[in-house]
Structures are given as structure tokens and as C-alpha cells.
Amino acid sequence: MTSFERPDLPVRFELELRSFLEDDAGLDRPDYLADILVRSAAAPQRPAWTFPERWLPMTAAVTGVAGPARVPWRAVALVALLLVALASAATLFVGSRPRVPAPYGTARNGLVAYEKNGDIYTTDPATGISTAIVTGQVVDTDPVWSRDGSRLAFVRSGSGAGVSLVVANADGSHPVAVTQDTVHGIASPVFSPDGRQILFLNESDPTSILWIASVDGASVRPIDTGIQLDHPANWGITIDQPSWLPPSGADIVFAGTPPDGAASGIYAVDIATQKVRAIVPPAHGVGVGVPAVSPDGRWVAYARSLASVADRNTSHVHVVRIDGSSDRTLPMPAGATFQDSPAWSNDGTRLVVTRGYSTRSQDMAIAILPADGSGVGVESQHGLTGCCDTRLAWAPADDQILVLPEDQSSGWTGQLLIDSATGVATPASWAGLSDPAWQRRAP
Amino acid sequence: MDQRALVERARRGDHEAFAVLAGAALARLDAAARLIVRDRELARDVVQDTLLRAWRDLPGLRDPDRFDAWLNRLVTHAAIDEARRRRRRVVEVELLLIDTPLPDASVGFANRDQIARAFERLAPEQRAVIVLHYYLDMPLPEAAASLGIPVGTVKSRLHRAVESMRAAVDADARPVQAPAGGIGG
Image (cartoon, rainbow over all chains, first blue to last red; front, side):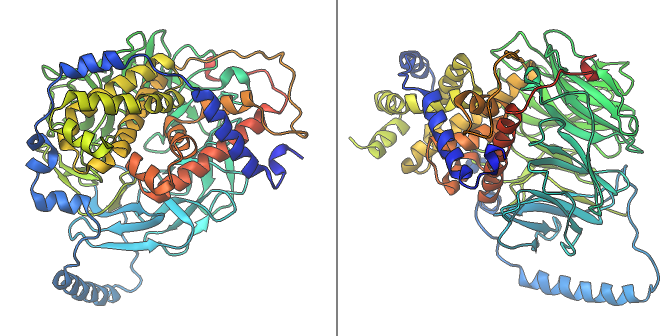
């Protein structure tokens, strides 16, 4: 029996954890208050009118910040009538199968899925009508759509049996737990191109954190990336942002750090052979991360920074062929200091990135620029987000970008929609605080 | 003078009032930042930037009674930012002493070093939620407000973080194997 099988351990572990935090924090009295006061005395305060709610339309600001929106009953009735009419029309097509979009390329915009208070909701961005589709006492989070938009996966916890990955129909019906009790920490679930498997990070597995589950629950297995995480020399290694390599999904692309710990790199692992190859090899003094693969599977966009510079963000967005050749840096406008967190449009021609105009995350914008490096593109107003954890997802039709801002201390408290042609941002009408997840539908 | 009055004065540009507020919060912010970023110097940078930003943005704080929660939120976000940047720049891997006698997992609870290593392995967001809840003693709804995420997400993140730590401590108690093959060549 290990110590963790003892029934009294959870409480004891929390006590140990509290005690560790108290000891580790110590009783130091920081000695740099004077420095702070010298700097702040020299810095002007921002006038109150410069804060976002002063330049956003009040209705938009209130919609994005406050609780549930008013129910537009007329619209609901019209939509209901429309749905009845559509349902009647659908019965005429007995035997026909639902059309689904191709796994990659542009598609029609469907529903946005999000989590609120441990339940899963979907909303139609066109009408703003939200529906709770998965509710209950358990905590359901992190919804993601399958590439054809027919299914949802989400992470379930709080049921007394650890954490499980659950797959359900698009309307939340027929939920099936697809992971076993041995999997306890689940993050970054993503459906395979054919929708039959889900890749996820098993954060509690000390030997391999890339895992694949079949959506019918028949199998759950680790992928060997060559990183033996149960060896002390490898503690601290991270695998970030894994994704299936389009179009087949035969490989998985991820950012990781090799066992010698020298620097991070971007890799692909062949699922069948579990052979690993470097797309962007690790280089001394260079940090790379947040890889995003183009929809045609030919290019990888990623962020590259200088490890030796600690006092400012030096990240640039690069695009490189999947074989590691033709690495190029995307341009920035005058005054910009860094770019980060790229995400490809569905047609593969543009990238959305976070763009900084200061040393760190004080003055950020979201920019949409051509992937071939031919220009600096358009960008949103500044101050929408912070640096390193902004989540960006293109609408299936590529007309908008759904954003979960990282730094919400400036007044933004939910998802944003950005017009991909103009860069103009507006608060979403729904109270979504989870990663962006937009359903693809057949054109 | 109570804190609310100090905040209102500082919001109107009274730097001496801000100095009192900053002095009262400094130790707490410094400890929280150190726990999240795991580096004393970086934590100092984080706290300096946080308080500088707090001074600059104070006129935008609508509710003076939320000053402490607002500062906690600023420092938590800044620390997560810094920890993520640091992790991406270079992951410094510490070679630990493999010859260290292995603990007997069957007889006792996790020791301090095991917990420290498990805590280091967490993602910055997971460390942040643990610091807010277990160190700053925030109820989950307040931690959620500080992080700008739903309560349900805080619950699941906290659950995952503690489970991950338990798994890591458990792995720590097992015999180690030599690393083999893989991307490190």
C-alpha cells in the first residue's frame, strides 16, 4: 500500500501542503519598497476616462460583464417557429444523412461551446441564445468540438472518482466517459481529424503525458515521446500544445524539452511507430513554443525568443515548413516589440497573434497578418489582453476570431469577438470564460 | 486611517497614501509571487511591476473595498505570465542526486522535499490556484474572482493540481530508472 491509498491521506496531504507553503514563503520582509515608491512617484496615473468601459459602448460593456442577458422573447418565438418549420422540412428527407464539413478548411459557423459554473453551455453567436446542455452536481469544464462538429468532449471532475474525459453528442446527449480511473489529470483534449480518437495531456502520469483515447471508450493509451518523466533529471519538462498533424493525423506535433534540458524544441511523433523527429531542433539560448500547424499540414507557426534576455519579452512568430526548412520571421509594425501565440485561419492564409508594444504585457493588441510574411496586417485596439495565455480561435468561416483574454484585470471579463478584416473587438454576448470552442458546420 | 480612505486618497493621486498601502501589502505579494514563479529575483520584478501598475491604474478601480483582491489579482496574473515566459525561454532542469536513499512510501507521509519537487512540476496556473487557496486562504469564489475564471474551473484546476502533486510524490517514492532514447537523442 502506498501512502496515497490510506483513507486519511487527503486531509493530511492538504495540511502538509499548507505547512510547506508557509515554510517556503518564509517570513521575509522585502527590502525594495523604496525602489517601488521612487518609480511610482515618477509615474503618472492614468486618467479614469482611459479605462475600457469609457470608450466601449455601455451596452456592449454591460453585456460582456454582467450576468445573464435579457431573453429576447420575440426572437425566441421566431426562432422556435423557424425550428418547427425546419424540422417539418427535414422530415421530407427521410433516409438522408446529415451533412458534415471536411475536417480542415473553412466551414459554416455553428455554435460556441463554453463552460460556466461547472456546466457546459452552447450559444448561437448570431442570436445570442444560450442553452445549458450538460448540467448537474459534477464539474464539467474545457469543452471542445470534434472537427465535423457532431460531438463535444469535456473534462468531468468532482464525482468522487477522479477526473474523466467525456464525449457527448453536440446537444449534450449520450455522454460517455472515455478514460479509465487510472487517468487523473486531463488537459488540452483535441479530437483527431476523423473524430474517432482524442489526444490529451495526462498531467498525473509520471511516465508519459501524451495520451490518446478512443471516443467509444474502448482504449486509452500513452504515446511514447521518449521523455521518461519518472526520472528525477527530467522533472520540470513540459509538453505544450499538442495537436494532430493534418490532414491524416498520423503524427502528433508538440513543443517539448529534451532530457538534457538544454532548450525547448518542436517535435512530431509518429503514432504508429512512436518515432520522434525534430521540426525545430533545440538551440542553446533559444526558447520556442506554442506550435500551430497549418490546415494543410505543410507549415508550423511558433514563437521563438532569446533565453538570455530576462527583462523583456523577445518573442517573434516564425513560420517553418513541416520538414524544418524555410524558417522565416513574420514582420511587425514600427514600435511593436514582440509577437506571440499564433493560430492559423481555416483557409491557411492568415495568422492571428498577440502583439506587444512594451517590454512585457502592458500594451498588447491582437493582430491578424498574412502567413506568407507579406505584411503586418490589421490589429485590434490595445489593452485587450496580456501576454502569454491568451486563447485565440478562428471562426469556421474565418470572418471572426474568438478570444479568451489572458489579463482580465483591466475590466474585460469574458470572451471577445474580433472582426478578422478590421481588427475591431466587441465583447461576446455570452458569459464564456473557457477556452474558445466554435462548432464547424457544413457550408 | 482605514484602508478605504487610503485607497480613495491614493486614487486621487496621493502618493503618500499609496506608500502606506504598498507597504502593508508588500510581504504578502512578495510571498505569493515567489511561490508561483519559484525565483526570488523574478518575484521581485513581478511585485515591482504589479505595484507600479496598481499606482498607475488606481483611478480605474471602481470599488475601493476590493483593493486587496485587485492587488492579489494583478500579482497572480503577473506571476503566471512571468512563470510561463520563463518556462518557455529555457526549462532549467535540475539534476538531482540519484544516489539519495529512496523514501519508504509505505510508512509515512510525503516529506518536504517531495512536496517541493511536486509543487515545482505544476503548471504556473496550478501553482497559482494552490497559492490563492492554501496560502492566501481565499475561498474558492474569491480565488475565481482573482484569477478571472469561473468557480467550477477553479475547483477542477485545484483538484487536478493536488492530484498531480500526489501522483508526483508517489512517483518520487518509487525506484528511478535511467532515461532512454527519445528526443534528447
